[in-house]
Image (cartoon, rainbow, N blue to C red):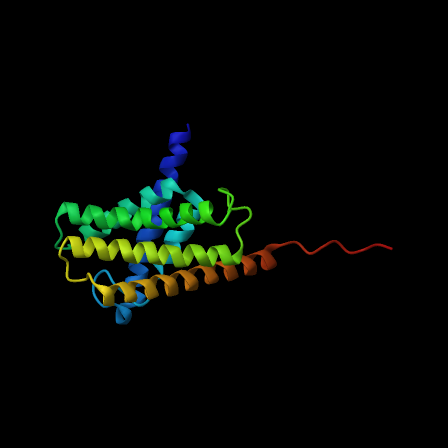
Length: 188
Protein backbone atom coordinates (compact mmCIF):
# COMPACT_ATOMS: atom_id res chain seq x y z
CA UNK A 1 0.00 0.00 0.00
CA UNK A 2 2.95 2.34 0.64
CA UNK A 3 3.94 2.11 -3.02
CA UNK A 4 0.77 4.01 -4.01
CA UNK A 5 1.69 6.75 -1.55
CA UNK A 6 5.16 7.02 -3.09
CA UNK A 7 3.73 7.08 -6.61
CA UNK A 8 1.31 9.82 -5.51
CA UNK A 9 4.22 11.90 -4.15
CA UNK A 10 6.16 11.44 -7.40
CA UNK A 11 3.15 12.50 -9.48
CA UNK A 12 2.47 15.54 -7.26
CA UNK A 13 6.14 16.59 -7.46
CA UNK A 14 6.12 16.08 -11.23
CA UNK A 15 2.96 18.13 -11.78
CA UNK A 16 3.87 20.98 -9.43
CA UNK A 17 7.35 21.41 -10.88
CA UNK A 18 6.12 21.14 -14.46
CA UNK A 19 3.47 23.79 -13.82
CA UNK A 20 5.88 26.16 -12.06
CA UNK A 21 8.51 25.70 -14.75
CA UNK A 22 6.15 26.84 -17.51
CA UNK A 23 4.72 29.59 -15.31
CA UNK A 24 8.29 30.81 -14.79
CA UNK A 25 8.90 30.68 -18.55
CA UNK A 26 5.98 33.05 -19.12
CA UNK A 27 6.86 35.34 -16.24
CA UNK A 28 10.63 35.69 -16.55
CA UNK A 29 11.50 35.57 -20.26
CA UNK A 30 13.40 38.84 -19.98
CA UNK A 31 15.68 37.48 -17.23
CA UNK A 32 16.91 34.43 -19.18
CA UNK A 33 20.34 34.19 -20.72
CA UNK A 34 19.41 31.01 -22.61
CA UNK A 35 17.22 27.89 -22.21
CA UNK A 36 18.93 26.74 -19.00
CA UNK A 37 20.22 29.86 -17.27
CA UNK A 38 18.15 32.69 -15.83
CA UNK A 39 18.79 35.53 -13.41
CA UNK A 40 15.46 34.65 -11.75
CA UNK A 41 14.32 31.05 -11.54
CA UNK A 42 11.23 30.64 -9.34
CA UNK A 43 11.04 26.83 -9.70
CA UNK A 44 14.26 26.62 -7.66
CA UNK A 45 12.18 27.38 -4.57
CA UNK A 46 9.61 24.78 -5.57
CA UNK A 47 12.37 22.21 -5.92
CA UNK A 48 13.59 22.94 -2.40
CA UNK A 49 10.08 22.74 -0.95
CA UNK A 50 9.30 19.47 -2.75
CA UNK A 51 12.56 17.97 -1.50
CA UNK A 52 11.96 19.18 2.05
CA UNK A 53 8.47 17.65 2.02
CA UNK A 54 8.86 14.51 -0.11
CA UNK A 55 12.65 13.87 -0.04
CA UNK A 56 13.50 10.98 -2.40
CA UNK A 57 10.12 10.74 -4.14
CA UNK A 58 10.32 14.49 -4.70
CA UNK A 59 13.73 14.06 -6.34
CA UNK A 60 12.35 11.36 -8.62
CA UNK A 61 9.33 13.49 -9.57
CA UNK A 62 11.57 16.49 -10.26
CA UNK A 63 13.91 14.41 -12.42
CA UNK A 64 11.04 12.98 -14.46
CA UNK A 65 9.52 16.46 -14.90
CA UNK A 66 12.87 17.87 -16.01
CA UNK A 67 13.30 15.08 -18.53
CA UNK A 68 9.77 15.71 -19.81
CA UNK A 69 10.49 19.46 -20.09
CA UNK A 70 13.55 18.63 -22.19
CA UNK A 71 11.45 16.56 -24.56
CA UNK A 72 8.54 19.01 -24.70
CA UNK A 73 10.84 21.93 -25.47
CA UNK A 74 12.52 19.95 -28.24
CA UNK A 75 15.91 20.59 -26.70
CA UNK A 76 18.61 19.55 -29.15
CA UNK A 77 20.26 17.22 -26.66
CA UNK A 78 20.98 13.56 -26.86
CA UNK A 79 19.40 11.28 -24.27
CA UNK A 80 22.52 11.15 -22.07
CA UNK A 81 22.76 14.95 -21.87
CA UNK A 82 19.03 15.30 -21.13
CA UNK A 83 19.19 12.54 -18.50
CA UNK A 84 22.15 14.23 -16.80
CA UNK A 85 20.31 17.56 -16.67
CA UNK A 86 17.22 15.80 -15.28
CA UNK A 87 19.20 13.98 -12.58
CA UNK A 88 20.92 17.19 -11.51
CA UNK A 89 17.56 18.98 -11.39
CA UNK A 90 16.10 16.34 -9.09
CA UNK A 91 19.05 15.39 -6.95
CA UNK A 92 20.95 18.68 -6.40
CA UNK A 93 18.28 19.87 -3.94
CA UNK A 94 18.33 16.46 -2.27
CA UNK A 95 22.11 16.68 -1.86
CA UNK A 96 21.77 20.12 -0.28
CA UNK A 97 19.09 18.82 2.09
CA UNK A 98 21.27 15.89 3.15
CA UNK A 99 24.31 18.16 3.50
CA UNK A 100 22.47 20.59 5.79
CA UNK A 101 20.93 17.78 7.86
CA UNK A 102 24.36 16.24 8.36
CA UNK A 103 26.42 19.40 8.93
CA UNK A 104 23.93 21.72 10.67
CA UNK A 105 22.26 19.27 13.09
CA UNK A 106 18.85 19.53 11.45
CA UNK A 107 16.55 16.66 12.36
CA UNK A 108 15.54 14.59 9.28
CA UNK A 109 11.86 15.41 9.86
CA UNK A 110 12.88 19.12 9.89
CA UNK A 111 11.13 19.82 13.20
CA UNK A 112 14.07 21.94 14.37
CA UNK A 113 14.67 23.76 11.05
CA UNK A 114 15.42 27.42 11.70
CA UNK A 115 15.26 30.33 9.29
CA UNK A 116 19.07 30.43 9.14
CA UNK A 117 19.25 26.73 8.33
CA UNK A 118 16.67 27.25 5.57
CA UNK A 119 18.83 30.06 4.19
CA UNK A 120 21.82 27.68 4.28
CA UNK A 121 19.77 25.09 2.39
CA UNK A 122 18.99 27.72 -0.27
CA UNK A 123 22.63 28.81 -0.57
CA UNK A 124 23.98 25.27 -0.65
CA UNK A 125 21.30 24.22 -3.12
CA UNK A 126 22.16 27.14 -5.40
CA UNK A 127 25.84 26.22 -5.18
CA UNK A 128 25.26 22.50 -5.84
CA UNK A 129 22.68 23.12 -8.57
CA UNK A 130 24.69 25.78 -10.40
CA UNK A 131 27.97 23.96 -10.01
CA UNK A 132 26.70 20.56 -11.09
CA UNK A 133 24.76 21.99 -14.04
CA UNK A 134 27.75 24.00 -15.24
CA UNK A 135 30.11 21.03 -14.86
CA UNK A 136 27.66 18.93 -16.86
CA UNK A 137 27.24 21.62 -19.53
CA UNK A 138 31.02 21.94 -19.90
CA UNK A 139 31.49 18.15 -19.94
CA UNK A 140 28.83 17.84 -22.64
CA UNK A 141 30.24 20.84 -24.59
CA UNK A 142 27.04 22.87 -24.32
CA UNK A 143 27.07 26.60 -24.96
CA UNK A 144 25.64 27.42 -21.51
CA UNK A 145 28.63 26.21 -19.54
CA UNK A 146 31.09 28.56 -17.87
CA UNK A 147 31.64 31.03 -15.03
CA UNK A 148 29.28 33.71 -16.36
CA UNK A 149 26.48 31.20 -16.59
CA UNK A 150 27.37 29.77 -13.18
CA UNK A 151 27.02 33.20 -11.56
CA UNK A 152 23.72 33.89 -13.33
CA UNK A 153 22.32 30.48 -12.39
CA UNK A 154 23.54 30.81 -8.78
CA UNK A 155 21.90 34.24 -8.41
CA UNK A 156 18.75 33.06 -10.21
CA UNK A 157 18.39 30.04 -7.93
CA UNK A 158 18.86 32.13 -4.78
CA UNK A 159 16.47 34.87 -5.93
CA UNK A 160 13.85 32.39 -7.13
CA UNK A 161 14.09 30.31 -3.96
CA UNK A 162 13.79 33.31 -1.66
CA UNK A 163 10.84 34.78 -3.57
CA UNK A 164 9.06 31.42 -3.71
CA UNK A 165 9.65 30.40 -0.10
CA UNK A 166 8.85 33.84 1.34
CA UNK A 167 5.66 33.99 -0.77
CA UNK A 168 4.56 30.57 0.42
CA UNK A 169 5.32 31.52 4.03
CA UNK A 170 3.17 34.65 3.77
CA UNK A 171 0.33 32.82 2.04
CA UNK A 172 0.36 30.16 4.77
CA UNK A 173 0.40 32.87 7.48
CA UNK A 174 -2.48 34.66 5.79
CA UNK A 175 -4.44 31.42 5.51
CA UNK A 176 -3.81 30.61 9.15
CA UNK A 177 -5.11 34.03 10.22
CA UNK A 178 -8.02 33.96 7.79
CA UNK A 179 -9.28 30.49 8.61
CA UNK A 180 -8.40 30.09 12.25
CA UNK A 181 -11.25 30.30 14.68
CA UNK A 182 -11.23 33.23 17.06
CA UNK A 183 -10.81 32.29 20.68
CA UNK A 184 -14.08 31.86 22.53
CA UNK A 185 -15.20 34.89 24.54
CA UNK A 186 -14.23 34.93 28.17
CA UNK A 187 -16.99 34.52 30.65
CA UNK A 188 -16.28 36.05 34.04
